[in-house]
Length: 294
Image (cartoon, rainbow, N blue to C red; front, side, top):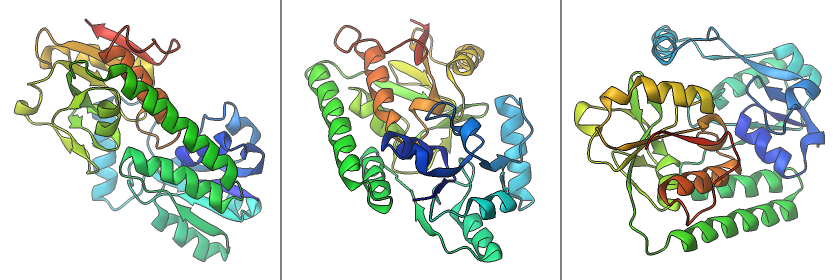
């Protein structure tokens, strides 16, 4: 089956299901499977200027939204040439990935008849369901079932490792300037890792933090949307003076292990658990998490 994945999580899921060879198009952000952008045409780019800091990116997003402009651009000619049978998209967040409404508009313009599967998980359990849905749509239901079983087993292993231990109160920052508090599945990652998410909206939308939200926690996890570990560490250092004194501050590769609704969220749970319960959960491979202030 010819699959065009117009969101990074969809590409990740396809790769973990052994469908990388079926991909005929991906986005500029897709990096799992490794090297996929060098092997497959890039169908979606960004309208945002490169290299901005969090404040500049936030300002650019707000400016384009106020003008009724999107954040992503579809290469219509490349999509037509790819001629997919299945398109993976989303309608959960117009800031995080190309929205499904744009896909529908492009399909109407091009006259394509590809099946469109929108992946819109709100909770961690929904992400596992999304894996099942992709497997069913792409003729890989058995592989999807095996993958989901393995992910559930790993989550159960973390739960068993942290059972009976004190659960730290964890404040997650999904953005640092302005500070945003987590929604959707991110609070579930903290819970699954043996923590208690504070100032969070499980299943809801991320919200701007107020002055009273940055208190009442035992640890802060800086997980800026779309950024890797090095940037997360730098941004954590920049906001230390705004965080409660004496509270541990950690950083995580959010782009890979927090904000993309794919199988690597379970890697994220394991990594967060290693920070919250050192010794009970093994440390992850280098490059996933770091402690900025112990």
